[in-house]
Length: 163
Length: 454
Image 1 (cartoon, each protein chain N blue to C red):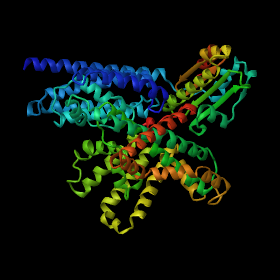
Image 2: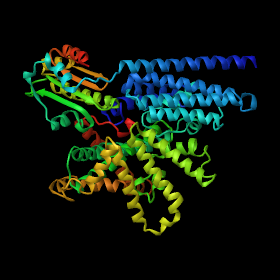
Image 3: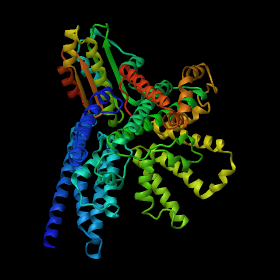
Image 4: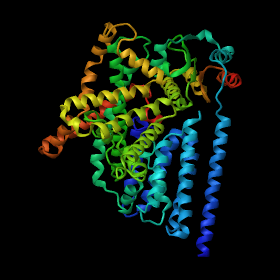
């Protein structure tokens, strides 16, 4: 009887420790995945300030759908700049989500595009392949960025600061 | 990771099947451990950061289950036992609610695995399973990768029964492959193409009535083939590993009433609500007022389970209204209407309901319904409507045919009643279908499953 009571007490304690860990995880998620109130144009301006846009052209809605499979109506804002020529690998896609539940879908779309481009240049476009390898996908709350450029790290840094 | 990706079909699945089946069936503990490991890998591949929540939830529910098991139902322990159940339910629902109703990233599959965890707790509490509480069994039940992310929501007592048999039934392997290929066909060839057709229309700001009707029909068919395709793949995968799962869809668009529709659409969710909410509240065995209350609660919860917007709540109430109407006002009188009319009306109700799924707000949903009746002033049909209809006509016809049992009957006739040659034809057709699906997957952009958002 005493052993049973002791076991129950231990179970109870461990159970509440787990609940505490769940709460800690939730608190961490709330603080680390904040929704940014920064306007889309402000973030776009910050992201492109240091980027060499001369090698890119603006993508139409149809191009965004074709390259990323994303439906514009689902998002608060999307803007794409993609290579002017087939031999370019410079690309920037910025997405502002209405719902952070879409993070996974946007991330997958960006990863898929990156993979396709890497496959395209694999074996002959060493420079482009290297750039794509260094490209960054950053998901921060309601914003997502895909940056493939020589200075992708700087662009992502500017993105983070703008949020 | 999803089932309809090349990495799953060519890397994950063959390796996991090979390892699992190489372990002798007598060594069930190793088989379970291997399956658990692959299930964790499957989850991590798709959503590594959320693994923490999943594992904490699994362990919490296991300990709650152990506590309930240790406490007897008599007067001395009864209250404490009840408190343990209530605590588990409150914690599980709170975690689900916080993720669903805050703007945090929703851990993949949380709606489904939370319901599995609750089934575990309830089945122990109501004495539906008699076991000592094996952590490996519980973890495998919740994490079993075919059903982890998007169901079907298998109940613990059913899973436990199969685990207790110790040996996996390899004889399900071929039927599992068939199921998986059919699911892949539904997803890759039907749902994804219907999605393209639907998105062409949904991006329009103004449209004629027929275009809006076509958009609604494309989405309704897409949702069915997407989710039933996923379910078929999940059931097929489970069978390849020797587990049986009940079907999750039974030709829902052939239903002749809304109640009937819900016996055929997402069957496992309906059964979960029936067994763990509706029946414990008194089910049908109580006064009409209480039956009404019970149904209202179930439908509000069904709506809330699906999402965090008013659309889903409205959608749940909308379906609940028709179920209650059929039960209390129409009853058997509906049988006087020809069956095809009943099927048509049921589909109309279901299809209009799906508008609340694809629109961002209730206002937008009603605006869309208005567009179906010419609110944009472009008439019933125009050149754009004709274009969308003719360019997707073949797809539409194939999809409508696949909503019924014709292809299943053809398959059964070949496999079960045909000659040996007919069997070869069946195998060749399956291989051909698989290759065709893969060919489509190679060039396609990543496409997720619609029900992943729930």
